[in-house]
Image 1 (cartoon, rainbow, N blue to C red):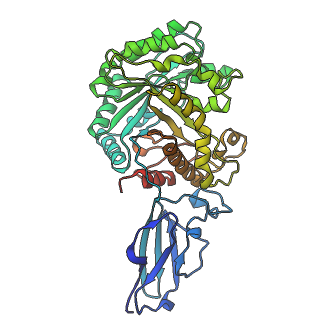
Image 2 (tube, rainbow, N blue to C red; image 1 turned 135 degrees about the horizontal axis):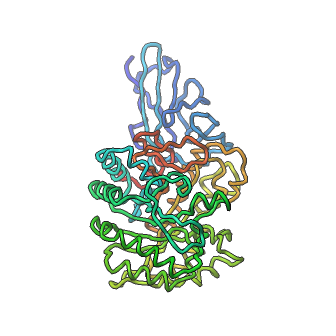
Length: 469
């Protein structure tokens, strides 16, 4: 044998390339008995035994292999940036291994990329030692991220109460999904680890409705909050945040958003401004408000009452608030599985433009009305199940099944679309703290980074587009 097979020119492979096996001069190709190719560690079972070229179409073929957690697709219109293709080239007495990782022809470096670590982070915190947590954050920083986002959870007994309260520890009559209010020690430990890893912090407030109320009245959440006495509600909630101010400022928290998806209280602009003015006296970080804009654009917000998005937005005049230093409020859009496809066998080529079309009315309205206010996607993600690109129609699909490739395609559309909209800050939802949560149920929403769980295809896409290398 005078030579050996190698990847063509040892050059980079991009998402629209094929991979050519380049045999050295004098090598007898007839010696090869079998070539196996593995995509992200999973064998491509549809290939012939031997070949000279792995075509781009083959690289983007998904045949329903259960190991890939994706149904069969009848086309090859998919994203594969960051995917690893490993070749095992066999003769009777030898095996060569060649590996190529696909680079992305589309590259983007947003000003901010946040990793949201899930509402139940206090539960994960108890399973990690401090050094493990710092290592986890350091890995995120090395990969792509500029900061960590996390929720501070509070509760109300009903959507119409005036009191907001903390719930430390699980109480089955109050808490859902083991989401609890962090203790002062838990909050400080998390912020210290984020800071030590060299990342910024973004703290979001999220008010949950008690489990007892939901057991009686059905699912209820923050968008339905409409207190009987708005001033008492704001006084109660303001005090809870004042209790956090010294800790948040001690660790130079960059962005604080007390409200997450709460259109019901957006009709009290003066009370919102008053609360923000009180908090900003002692905070050096930026203040934001996350709106469930996704639902407003779809016309299905609990507070819609037949109004269009713009009719609702015109009443939300608190966006013109600035702090004592003249810093405006940040406009944060909740972007959770908007409709960007009209068929279940998703096509990556159409989804980015559909994403831009869906979001343009909100982005253009707020940008023209409040030109000084920065905009971001404060919550952006999707479920790991087939048909999630359909938006609300996803819920009509019975018997949810995995589709990790759909999530990967959607993330390509999210990133390409965000750049197209001129939004330079996004919050990836959700990367569980310590990579402890697995995507083991169809309909979960975790993006695993490969630390303790297999790396999600979606995470490969994110790294390939935004990562440093």
